[in-house]
Length: 279
Image 1 (cartoon, one colour):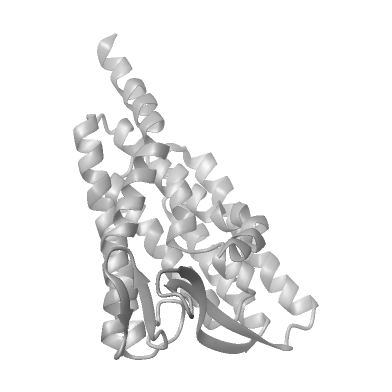
Image 2 (cartoon, rainbow, N blue to C red; image 1 turned 180 degrees about the vertical axis):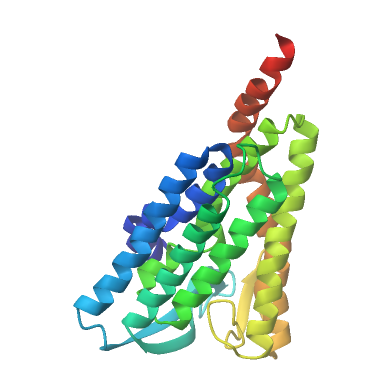
């Protein structure tokens, strides 16, 4: 897991550009949105030019990993992270270039068609969940087109949440929501986010569709408090590797990180929103 994270570090900032643009744009005017749309469109065009200028027909193989804890052999009391290969995809390099072109282009188009709207905070939950779904789909598309492993791990709901959560708090503050309402909607947003991941994981696993959310090849897992679970069917694998963690550990983790990253943006934005009323 640490190695996967380190290898992905150089790609995090480029991968998060659409999230920054989509969440920042509602606060910008026509010119700002147009500039962001143009920037994302240039990235999309750049990938197309790259495919046309350089031969990308060589086939690549991506062994899609997912990491779950399991008991070490010979000592039932010790657990360790185990890297499972849950899918193997072969595709020429131009496939993931086109996938990136599509998603960058969609983000650019979304900003461009909304460039004339007046600056205003968006519905915080809808905006956060929308960007989460964008990144979930983008991650799955990269995996199904055999993108390099380090790039796929820089994309997805969890990496994008580093941007989503502070912006969510900022939008709550700009909407003049008090702290109680902010926390309540943070939990609601996190629940929707994790339910979406679990739902896609259900279809991926029970139909063997591949991607990191297809866990039908995982045979056992070590769970906190519950101990070892042998996974005899795809449905059981989904329940214990995806549904239970997403709606417990990942839900709590998202809420806690949301408070840590969002408390200051919420306070600053709410103070700014309330300032005109106080004068």
